[in-house]
Image 1: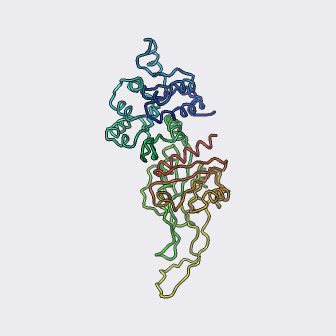
Image 2: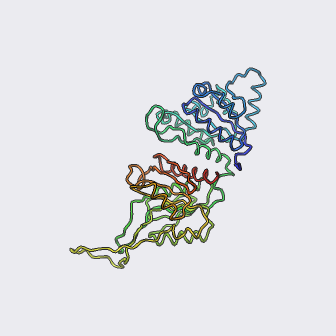
Image 3: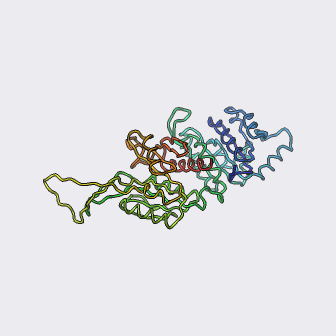
Length: 402
C-alpha cells in the first residue's frame, strides 16, 4: 500500500478509558499501512483491554512498566523514544492531558512524553463533564500552545448513557489526523478544490427575489477544512452573512446564472481536482423579471417560473475533477440522492433532510449520509458542521485511496 506512513516509527500510548479497545483498530490500520508500531499501556488501560491483543497486532512486546525487570530494558525505552517519528495517545484521558501539560512523569507514558520532542497527537475520550472541566481545558490549551495536537472529542452518547462531547473521534478521522502529523505530506497538498456555497437569489424585480434558507455554513466549513488539509481553495458563494475565509479565494455571486458562469470560468482557469457543489442553487427562476418595481395591486397575480440552470449537469462533461454533490430532501432521501448522483455524474453525494431538527439550513449542526458511486456509504451522526466537513473529507480521501 502506498501510504505517507510507510516505514514510520509510531508509538501508540493507551490510557485508562473505556474507549481503549478502539485503539486496537488504530494499531491494526497503522500496521496495514506498513507502520512500525510500539505500544505502551498504563495499568488502568490494562483493565479495559489486555496487552496480549496489542502484542499480537504489532509483533512487539507491549511496554507497561516504568521499572523494567532489567536496567538495560529501561535504556532501550529511551533509545526507542529517540527513534520515533510520532507519538499518538489514544485514548487520552483527562489524567494524561493534565500530567503532560504539567510535566508530571510518574508512569511509563508520562515519562516518555516528558523526554520526546516528536510530533505528538492526543485523541481524547472521557465523560463530557471531565472534558469541560476547567483543569482539562487549561491543560489542552497549554499543550496546543506548545505545539502538541489535541483533537476535539466528538458529540454523542457516552458510556454513561449521557449525551455530550466526549466520544473518541471516528477511526477514519484519527487516521487522517495521524497522517497530518507529517505536514509536508498533507493529503490535499498541491491539490485545487473549488467549492460552491450558500443560496442564490432569482430576481422578480429590482426589489424582490426568490431564494431559500441556505446559510452557506456547510460549504464554508468544507472550504476551510480543504484549506487546512493543504489544498488551494476557491469558494464561489451566494449571498450569505458569513465572514470571508482567510487564505481562500472568494468569489461572490447572486443568481444561478452568475454561479454557473463563475464556476465554469474557474474550472477553465484552473485544473481543479475536486468540485464540491454545496450551494443551494435555485431550481426555478422568474421567466420575465421586471426592470421596474412591480406595483401592489388589489388583483391577484401570477408569476411564471422557468427552470434555473442545472450547474452540475451542465459542467460534468467539462471537468475531470472528483465531483461531490449535495441532496437536500424531505422524503425518499436515499433513492433521490442516488438518482441525483447518477443523473449529475457525481462521484459522491451527501444527503441531509430539510425537515430534521438540527440539520440542513440555518443550523450550526448537520446530520448527513454520504454515498459514493463505487457503492460505499457512511452515516455521519449529528455534529457541528466543521466536524462534519472534516469527516466528509476523511471518507472521500479514504474511498479514493482504496
